[in-house]
Image (cartoon, rainbow over all chains, first blue to last red; front, side, top):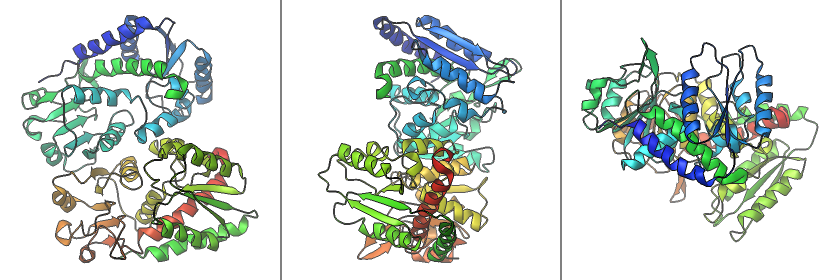
Length: 277
Length: 277
């Protein structure tokens, strides 16, 4: 079955709309970006579209690469002082000349719907944060929705990056799954994909996972995302879909759900208040 | 080769002694424990012995199980106010009636040589903490000392607990190894142990790893520790030692090294100061 991420995201958004109706105060989300070549612009626009649906004021700030980390940090601190701004999102990755963790730590933990501050990540590590990094929350949502068992299952996570591979490895460990975390240096990938009950792929390498590499009935969450000749591609070949019990396509799979979960996190943070995080 | 953890720990302690000579001020370490049956007492005594060698005042507080989490938290906050106390260690696990993370978060991050506060764990997650959880630091020390390659190697971590399995899985992911994290529900353990280049075992199950389960030349760090009929036992059978290129025995392997690394962390925290952590 191919998961319709767009339809599921819309369901989440409809729930959020109903909640928004009960919140009689203005809500703003600030998105801070340092774009080298406009590559992140489409992601910002997707977030903006959902903000409009939810009657959230979308404040987008774009800074030049020449800005210093300290200055960017200062802008975030200033944004955080604004009581109407309930969440601050920094579009990642920042260009290499930035001290990324230093910038991200300027976000107050209670205004951090992307779960990127040290404090929130520490609580996430301890399995006691009430929200989850949006990609993790999206996959958790699918696991619950489709009643997927985790205990004792072999979960293969391809890639070890900060937004997909690392937080998901940790989250699946917290769920007591058998977790296999691999990277591009891993020698025996096919052997591992063939044994996996669940595969999460965040390599950003089109057609990395081919039909002969997976077992019948596998569950695949494709979090890879690259633009190849103008089209968005994930890590999983299209013909794998015949073999999978469940698979998220690219585009239209995890992508829209991750945006919806950013706002789900934002609303939870608002409802929990500064101490409840 | 069987690693002599006691000798290596003593080397670390000798280095610390030399550093201590240059620090012309009193240093105290506070150890806070809620012991149900005296089971943790021997661990506290091992720490005390090293404190004496390093001219560190060892302040040991034992509280009854009837104490409330909030009260224990208050005691830690009071200890932290004492400028001579440079480190606070909470003997884990606390009895179940305690809110463990709430208690641990009372330790100021700059006085947390065990790396148990949310803030330090967040920095550890991001690979930017200057110290490491003592078990992790001990294994890192052995990996560097014996020049063990990690990239592309299959690292199997048995157990997913908060002191061994979880932090080590994360650390090895940060080192770009292929990491396999398993628990007692994992079905195909022997298959996985046979493929592993490096095994870290923290299951606390004597003789879990037998000779026929590992390949020739494997490297094994045995972090299992149970008392069976009055003797300390690890997870690895004695006869496995013939097949291993490198193995830490129990007792006398990781144990003494972990205590030494607690003090290595303490000295680093002192030298880094409150902002350098």
